[in-house]
Image (tube, rainbow, N blue to C red; front, side, top):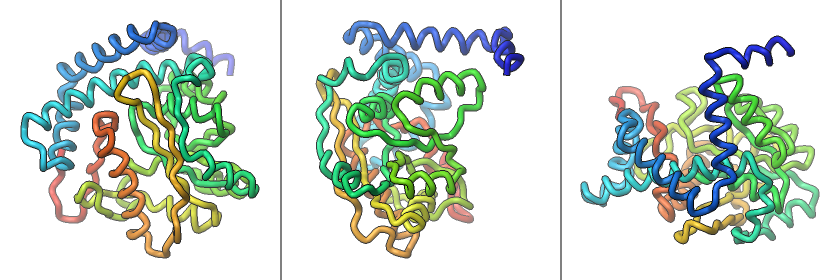
Amino acid sequence: MGNRRSNFAHPRYWPVWLGIGGMYVAAWLPWRLKLWVGKLVGLVAWRFAGRRRHITETNIRLCFPEKDDAQQARLVRDTFIANGIGIMETATGWCRDPEHLRHRVTFKGQAHMARVQAEGKGALIIGVHFSTLDLGAALHSLYFRADAVQRPHDNPLFARFMGRARDPYFDAIIDRHDLRGVVRRIKSGHGVWYSPDQDFGREASVFAPFFGIPAATVKMTSRIARMTGAPVIPLMFHRNPDNRTYTLEYLPPLDDFPSGDETADATRINAFIEDAIRKHPDQYLWLHRRFKTRPEGEPGFY
């Protein structure tokens, strides 16, 4: 372990160290300056990150055909701004005690999770990849403890930093491929936070409508619910229009889930996610290739 840690002094890790240092600085900036820097970061990325802008433009064109060209272009720009601010929010969630933001949070629907915990049950918590995700998780920990499913970061130094940053507000971090670990933790009475709104490939998915487009949607949600018998509780989290406060909200546990039909279950989950996105479309992570995997014979979008 000592040798591995010493390797982080290698020059190839210096940009990562610089980024980590920048996140610590960002976390302690005054709120207005934090928003200004986040907006600037987003605008710079919008201007120069051509590949990500193309992906975002494609997603928004596909999902919001009712918007005209100018409206779509505005949403693309707003998405980059929101995700730039999201970097500052992530820095805040990772590098500061979330207690200092308690006064900025309104938490609705707490009774749904409190009832499950009072019964000594675990739960599968369905989240969404909004730009506010990590700050939301930190603020959620002020009220309820949970585990989280995540994909490890490819860079080992940043992966270690991210793991240590998330450790204080999650009881356990579970690899996204560790289905048994997720089932074990839920059966032992833990809530597990899981976001099923990314494309994990054909083998792990069924095709279910997402904004009216067949999208590869993971089957794991139904399988976990079936294997544990635990309630599936949607969780919404967003930055309010004032850019100073946040809303967390648990919705009621899904009735008759799983249904025995994985495609029908995936459709229900996508419907919840789509509804959450439509309320705050700029805060969603449109920068990822949500429609990467296509049904056999269909051309790619990107």
